[in-house]
Length: 219
Ligand SMILES: N[C@@H](CCC(=O)N[C@@H](CS)C(=O)NCC(=O)O)C(=O)O
Image (cartoon, rainbow, N blue to C red; front, side, top):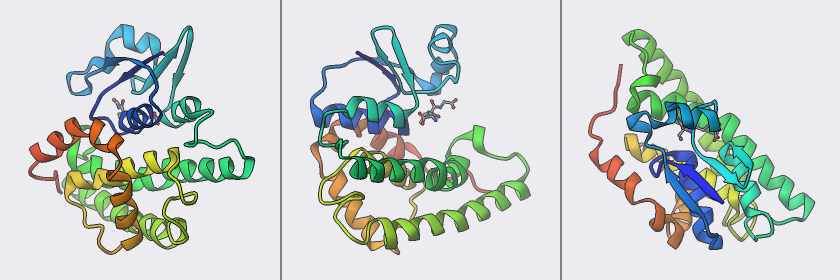
């Protein structure tokens, strides 16, 4: 199998962590997003979305980080086969992808770090950030007081692919030095996921990117 990824990309990092966690043998190909390699014709032929990660398993090509995590985690403790446990994991991953990531990741973090997500008009940028901040706070409160209130991890006492994906999404906040202290269960959970060897194994390039970033693109 071969994973096309960028080591700093959000969706790639969760996949790389799972590969470390379950000791999968994997060929890798780096697609450097900052150099525009995801728009190269040969990559677009593989994934017309022009996005990473992409998994090749023989002639089977799979896109979408969430789908790749589920495919790779099959048979492991990171994606138990018990229907109700699996349904909870799917629920959490859908919640992150359609809720928290939209407002916290795209609306708040990327709008201040990636020029493509910034509005040229200062008033539009300020209004967008304001709305995203309000919505992100609501998602973080739900994460803190609902999803993480009852256990160490999102779906019980052991980590699953939902934790790997969710923790990578929430720690995007590091890029803009976002204060998570109002969310003690989130802080505790992130501490646990970040303490895993798989975290440090894949997060060197991300840590370097965060360290090199000085000033959020504000209004
Ligand atoms: N829905 C896709 C989104 C993948 C995605 O947007 N990946 C980012 C990196 S985190 C990317 O490749 N961005 C390039 C671009 O959008 O131009 C998934 O969940 O895998």
